[in-house]
Length: 383
Ligand SMILES: O=C(O)[C@H](O)[C@@H](O)[C@@H](O)C(=O)NO
Ligand SMILES: [Mg+2]
View 1 (cartoon, rainbow, N blue to C red):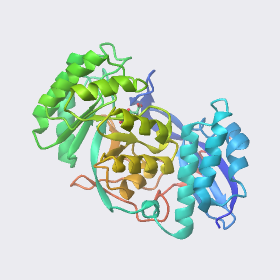
View 2: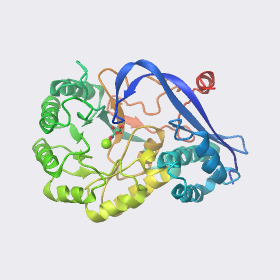
View 3: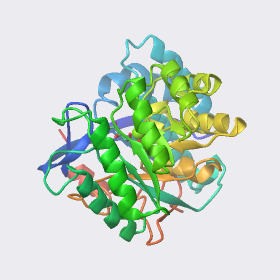
């Protein structure tokens, strides 16, 4: 038994050049102050498991009303039981206990178990590989000169990413509030420019505006087929499964999803049944944790599908290291103005450094493998 003694979240500040637009997409911005929380679950053995999360996701109300009531005194080794109890509390939480909160708790529980047993989480989950190829996932397009404001700038950045070692690149193109977005023509021009820049051997994917009509999505999809793209992602509202099923029937380029759709592994089972995508998608923050993300991966495998894990970071990387049916680790989000390889102030090292061949090596430390700068966090804790 790994008896849980306490659960806490510490909010801290850190310098950042990432800003968020009205639609929640990140872009480069002036040097500013970011806020983040570190959720920590401590056992009676004195070991702690951790997960970073937005402060509001693990705010006191969420910990006091739900998380502590389920976890404290429980056995971290029974994390499926704990997860199911938290999921049960969601329905009556008036939307306060989010899938992201479940994701943070489940990730910290996995970290606690791994740190206690001295085993990396990806090996606890199964252990399929010790390194994985990464694709460069760009930030969304912008109107910043020299940034990602034109098809040519996407092409320039793609050349830089190939030189860095990436063997695949996913374009997030322009979305509102960018003044000219959405634009079918510009999306196609950016994809064409990048394909011409990197040649035929680099895999390319598009993840653009998320609310195109069926007919607009079809126009873009046809162009991606000409450009031999590897997949087409979240081009329509994912709440319309029928639209994805229709589009999948029209196109040869693989559709990938759902990313943003709530409903965890349950909704993704319905997508498989509906034939709404060719490649499934799940991520630890969007699906409510490592455990449900693994369930989606296994569901996909049972139907001969890949499951491309959504997002970067230690929990998602652990899942990618534990499953066969995922081609890439999503490394990003990337932008010409930002150095992704710069270690955040609250860490002592990146969890996902990439070698010159484009591989990310799974961390071999116990737990999720994050080398957290606890002193920095203590010095920058919000009172
Ligand atoms: O803000 C978002 O929608 C996400 O960061 C998104 O851009 C990115 O994570 C994604 O879509 N990856 O596939
Ligand atoms: Mg996406």
